[in-house]
Image: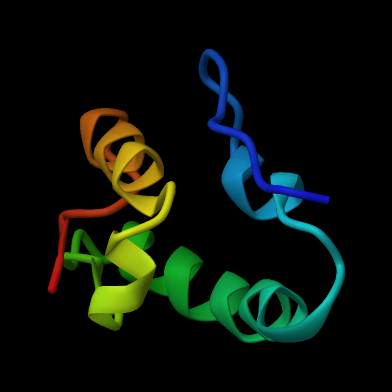
Length: 75
């Protein structure tokens, strides 16, 4: 039930790759509308995360999302 990086040009592949549990479920539900609105209006998408998240596998996912243009940055 771990997330996996998106392969190729898949719309919202990252959200679909998340398990349907805990905060991932909340991100899927609330994030979709905000993300689509930001993308349509050419607004930056910046994620804020706790440092404990960055000590795990998240950096490779964040870099992948930034390289593919899904997010603008993270803090």
